[in-house]
Image 1 (tube, rainbow, N blue to C red):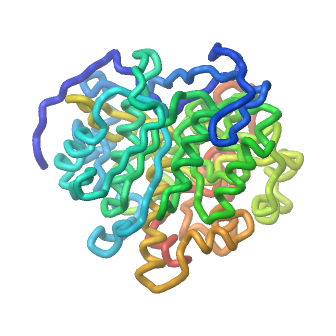
Image 2 (image 1 turned 30 degrees about the vertical axis):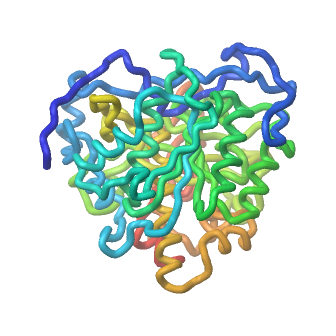
Length: 437
């Protein structure tokens, strides 16, 4: 393992999960947007405020980090740690070859291409840049100046670097939106989905729910993308479940919502275990106030407490992934410094990488493309995930911990056997998951 000097910028604010507050973000309402996006009078086109989940390495809780025993920089989890923990196939066998992962973010400072090269070099990953066509960036902001108070640079680093870490041969397409406004982000999602070869689009951001989100200009955009066989993944949020903080697009039935867990030890096992991984308190989840429960959920949850309590509304997240910024962070390189990072933002791009592995496997086996499978399955990729045959061998069920961050009592906030609103169906056991494809 190489050594490197740590340069810490403690005042850097990380957008591990970006909450577009409809009541507090300010700005003015807008009724029009590019590429057919109609923002709608119900949506405030304000600027997102990045969540602060970047922990300076020299201020970390070293007691927790010592317990973690990560082999990454500063004791964080390395790509090898997570490849082992989530039982990914050896890179020599499957690494995302000829697949494209799209990442949508708002503008950030810095030079992600250079940062990705440094990250790859440190972790001895394949070089990924524009010269070898592994990395491509579409900047819809045209290099607009970034406000220090709303800089998505480390979020971009987290998304790009860790998607590459989990599928090192996949192409990474970063689409930077014109701004953090909902309409602009949706234009970026459409742009990403229109590029050739895209398997999945990762969205590490969200907005509070609002009445027009089920309209053609919002869910309709996702529905059309899913119909074309592309899987959309979104972070579920970093504020847990207080009963009123539901997050869209994670609540959209056309999106795979990724919640958060905490890994107790990188050496506890070679795969998730009941004692080695629990719910992260910040894992966003709950019952949508707007979206109806899709049939892929209701079919699996028949007779369950969750189905009865949801009263016919969509529940989320769908799956989960390591997210704890304190107990099980990962390292992100940005502009000459390393950051210990967490949040459900980490899960969406890494699950997108898992999609690239699935697509790679299908192509190698001479099967129809993953895009065709998604397009032909009711409910898209979620329709596949919620099939009863994907039991605990493919998705490890998290059964401990809570994401209750504000309720006196919240039975559905506690992880339990089967689907729950804290970690969904569970975390991936990737080699086993691949066997179903």
